[in-house]
Length: 225
Image 1 (cartoon, one colour):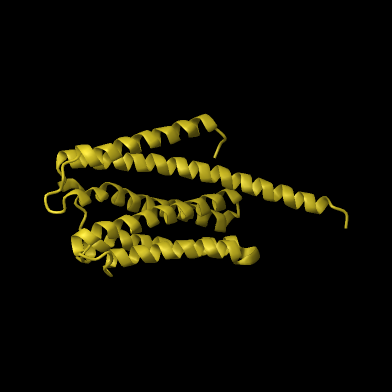
Image 2: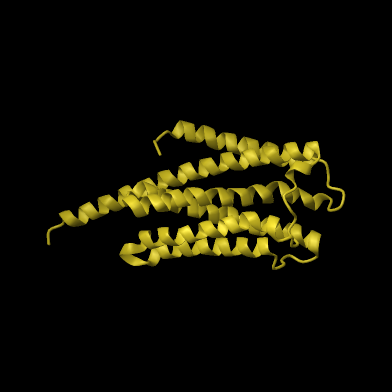
């Protein structure tokens, strides 16, 4: 990722502005859902969070496959950054979902197929981070291989609602009332911009970490024995 702090700053400011507009629209502009009332507004943050989690998976897969084939550090940085963002947005989805579910189901959690598979996906990604940090010299290869298993889980998460009609609601975006649909897509845009800003920042940080590690290795090699 090229060094361009001005572009990154513009992206970050744009993300913050669009998210602020989306939040305002969610609470003050979008129509209130007839059955669930005010709590339904979690939808505008829960669904984009889940989407960003799933968006990270193909980026993670590209980085993992690229690193396993070429051993290029840039691919490893992409895979690791995508894993971290998938965990972040997955955690947001797992936090906002139960808050919504408490109103819809009367309990914070049910072992629905979509919920359970999403939890397993996030735990698998956490395992990728742990392995990458503590698996020794082959940590990056093992972490990349493990992350590829998360791809199958992510596909399962995406199709589970259409295959199994559990307690989790189906995909109903196209049936939203116009003010709700506009608000939803503004929030989705804000989350995409935020994701881009976070990914860019994390890749720059990973590059600096690699450069620092290389300098430390070079310093140790130059020390007299």
